[in-house]
Figure (tube, rainbow, N blue to C red):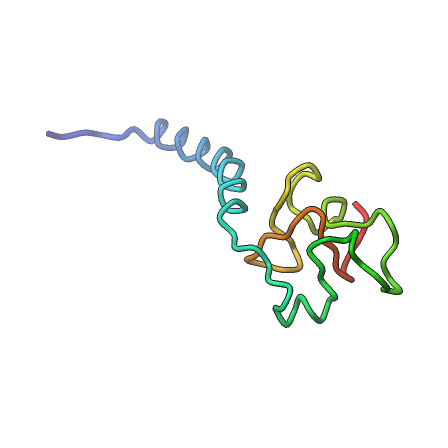
Length: 104
């Protein structure tokens, strides 16, 4: 059986995939990321803690700072975990904190 694809139909599908693909795939990629291990060397060098409310003493920490309101957090503040621009390939908790914090 022979099937021909018209150029116009192909271009419509390609444009739809280019627009919808990244939007639909972003959540799936973030959901499949492994959680960041606080013992990871990069996490330790940046003073990462999974729960900012438990920070005892850190000169750069200010109350109210946590991953959910950081510019590097690639999710909504209400999401419990999301990808992070600093810790590529890992999900961080919204309640976490590190020295790379930058207010959103």
